[in-house]
Image (cartoon, rainbow, N blue to C red; front, side, top):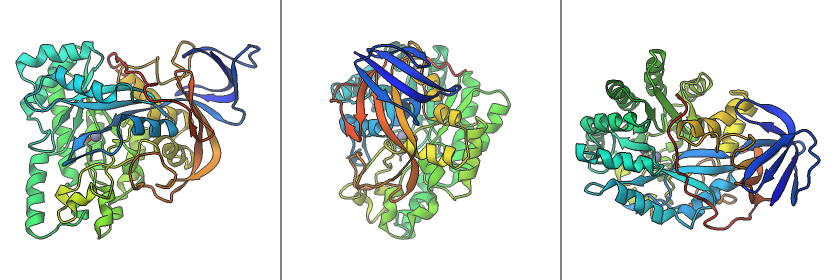
Length: 459
Ligand code: URP
Ligand code: ZN
Ligand code: ZN
């Protein structure tokens, strides 16, 4: 099957030109001006942006967490991602305590296999790593899972001690692997939470007030210091505030291999969104939303490359029956929020339309940088001859209103409800197949393939 995308404005992290693109099967085969070639399908992209499919390297489909399970499974979540112009996700397999690393990987393969609308990879959440498990960690890497998430938060669930962090960083680093760090001092936070509850402070807003920015900054500082001692790179996930960003910036200025992502919620929402009542549970995520002034600092970080990636940390829980678990106690509200469908258009609007970043940087932050960081480039993350034909045709002028009424994420609210933005995903191709066209999903479960990733090429 050959598809010709005609006369679009092709934008990658570095290019910006008008061209036709011929796709042969799953791969971009020819790029040129006014191609005179036969195709089975022709897509007119005049007046549209033609960009690489988005890569969201931080999602949690079907994650069992906080006494319930994230509301999107690999089918609904990846379909919603496709609607929003994302053609690759990297989700998280979980190794529970006492479990073999390879068992965890196998469990997550079973959850995702045959279900996904787009291609996917896994990081591995590692909750135990003794010396005798290092070889197994390397086997996991050989199987294409080259990054591991460790938690300094959630004591008794995911938290690991500094010795484990050091071991994991050393062992991953030795083979070019990457540790993704949830950096927050969860031990101190738990004490602050206990105090708040004892004083009768139970509303959702106390989730934010018990997780100060200094707890995140301390985690980031410690993660980077351990990485430095382990002589390995580190990637800070869901960085939310200026205090934490300053730690990354200081390290990078010293030449340390510290990388970080932020998420749309920290760029567009703030602590004010919690309000006083239970509606604020919609925004209970970790780290929490911060004071509004942090947003400008994060945009500055994105512009100056102290932050390299924008992911979503998509981890949706419905208000009904799920967030409600914490109606009388904020610490029992499952942590997480939806976003995988909204990321690409939100960043286009808030970044490019509102003049904070260039069009090329928008592509880099939503696609290319993640491909390089997580060993997928140049198969993914760009439009080039030989790359996978993961392509989004994006209308830069059309407007949309984000709403639970029109979204495809399997959750009963949208964190950006009523927000009017410019930029609409029109057509999405995943390895050459049209999966979204005229607002309709054209694919089927299982179209997506597991991606055996290589190692980071961002360094
Ligand atoms: O609130 C969040 N972020 N939930 C998902 C788990 C995590 O920490 O990434
Ligand atoms: Zn996390
Ligand atoms: Zn997460």
